[in-house]
Image (cartoon, rainbow, N blue to C red; front, side, top):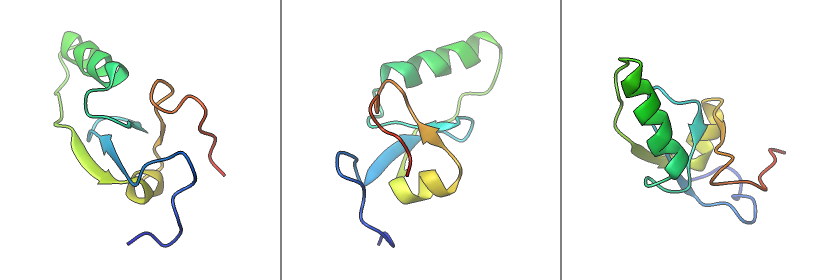
Length: 75
């Protein structure tokens, strides 16, 4: 359970990877795909996408994906 309601226009659950710095609205996000392709090209390990609560992602210090949440500005 979230300690505060999710801001209007956001979702309760988002997608992240262990190596990423942002959260995504969809596991099929184009920016997420491109980020993983870029990491793979650099020889880095690719981490699985996982669904987490928005509050958890924000609590980990992650920002919002600009592609998924173009209008989002943290409070």
